[in-house]
Image (cartoon, rainbow, N blue to C red; front, side):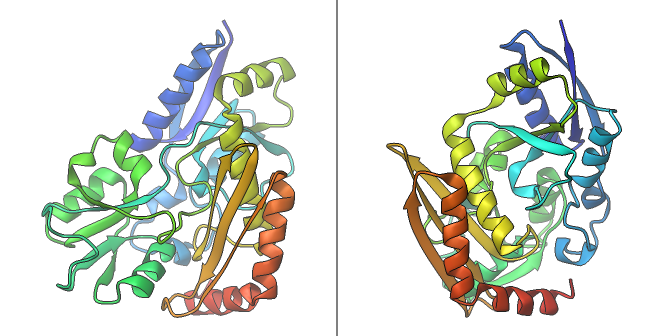
Length: 308
């Protein structure tokens, strides 16, 4: 039995995802070994992601290990991947996407974003902060870094009244009892890749092993949607530290991609959506229309405001 070395962050959620990938590999007769590390994004918790100064704060160490041959594959939350990857690496699979929406968590079931009472909402995402300011300006966003368990402790300690998180991670960590609100995909449009696990490897990985990994882990409909979203991100030259959003759905062989760029204060929102069958062409089409509507100028302004 071929043993595949899976590189991963060492958070509880990342390890859950790595073992999930391992279970998928077993369906093709592959064994697995977990190689867990702490990334820059996990180590630096006193600054927002936009201030750390790296586009791959959760991925670059794992990518270096792939290049050095220390691991065979790396599993990433797809939303953490930069739009451009090292030339010697490739993405070979995307696992079936979990429900992609954002959710509100609180110890008080009555606390939702619809509350007229001003709430302190914990989040580390510039996208969620911007949507909060756009749709619910009565609330205040407070910086909330760390893994899900750490954030839950901060909530219990009274550092915020509620938190905004991705449903996928909350579900995988069995924290659904704290959910007070599921947010609409049409309102709080998710980050590119949210809800799926991406499998990355070096171009030099044995072709037969690569094909077995892809057969075990890749979900074709998810792959189509994520490729459309990632082409959008690449053409916009966006990243996980700026409020670019994009979510595609796959129905009856067609893809519909909804995307946009939102100013940090939530005032300016540039949006576009389109339908097509080719993920790369659809991602590019939506990005080009957003650029025509002023997305590059807005992104330049956002990066200046973030100091990145």
